[in-house]
Image 1 (tube, rainbow, N blue to C red):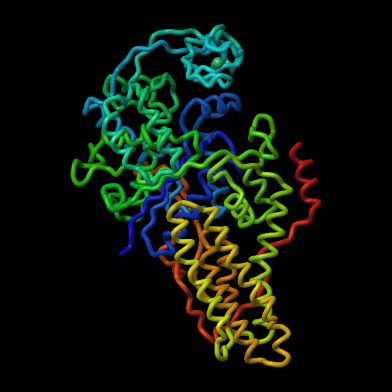
Image 2 (image 1 turned 180 degrees about the vertical axis):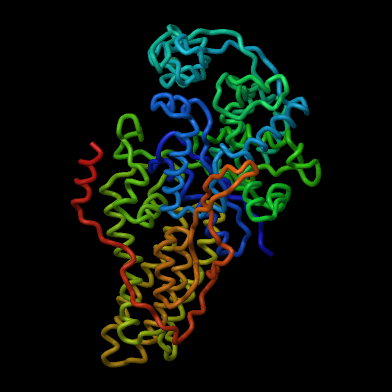
Length: 591
Ligand SMILES: [Zn+2]
């Protein structure tokens, strides 16, 4: 029976275009996972959107003289286009400025408040002396009281690593205009995390299938759990749903609190948009539906401690949940990646050390990028993107191994037979090769289910080289001159293996796998197509979401039965060999 699987992908922040580091962490791994499970016949719901509230958006908008919404509109569009071009197969990629999202966030806030999980506390807030508006922690700089570092941030010191409070800094100053901030008392709501400490400890301890670093890190966080502010003095965010705050224009829900609730609100939006408004419950209130979250390692705390605490507090809900059925499900796995650097340096948009996704994809195809980010990306340790390595892996691995196998198999079949040839009697080596390739479905499937993407792709590539080796030994292009039946048998064997490998490669390389699917003479989709759709809300406002129809995919994660006599379409190379001079050109561009 089809399993319901939630693939919850970190929400990219809408204050600029996304660079390769971003999509290496949250994007490509989650899409590989979702595509694999769809091919398995499972019922995947893959959700995300742009995270659009908070100070970085409002400050960037101020600098440009536009409204925060206008800035978010622009980057939502750019980011959505990037993810579409990269082939990330969301069921819904939406945004946090929708009415639906506001309604769900406010319901979660109100429910936690009614249950007594939100505490009111008066704290010293930092405000800009020039504008009177709140200054977020990370926009305050000063000397670290612990190590004396001069450029410590209000939230932490990058030199000694200690967490700080802006009021601790010596000689604090605003990073926006250099003036010292003004500190004054302000009331905020805090999520009572210590109230969940025991439940969280018991739950995390049971998660023995998590990557060890995620589990250990999360358990350590529980040792020092404190209430965490979920409101801010700011005018850009979701309003606080309590009567006494109804006309307080300068107090809003803190962006991190609203962003994690996006996983739930996006699922609800998806269900409504299909005319099945309760369908989200099949994932969220179903203990048999595992939830997988994908993110960079800097976001672990939100997904293993804070979001689970919110879910525990909400239970089966207020207005949105309706108080019936199972409580909302906690994460089954939290798949965090490490960081990607570029040519040995940390990505930094402000210092120009950056490769934007849209810029990259304007010159190169998406599959070679997806290949590189999987085989050489930051899955288990920090990884480095270099142009030399990108060109080498494209040419020596993708083109020389998989691309070459497809090309020589299909070209020889197409030229000599035009269709899947009728094989003669199979020799033991033909049978052995087909069986070895077929075993890839189980081996690679197990690796993918364990979120070991690099190992899975490495295994698929190993199988491709085995088939290449077989072809080089059998030389059907020579044999055909003397023994047409034996050549047909060898090419049939290779073609079957290529067809199996096509399916195994699809989660990683969806664009070229679809192309190969068509060249093999099949119709329909095993991958794609994605589509943008306009959504209209109750008040008539519209927004664009990225979605796709994956239920109609014809591919299945199993050995194919390539019909004999199926007419092939004219083969074209799947990948382009890159000239070595690309390396110098690109390095010059990014200096
Ligand atoms: Zn320090």
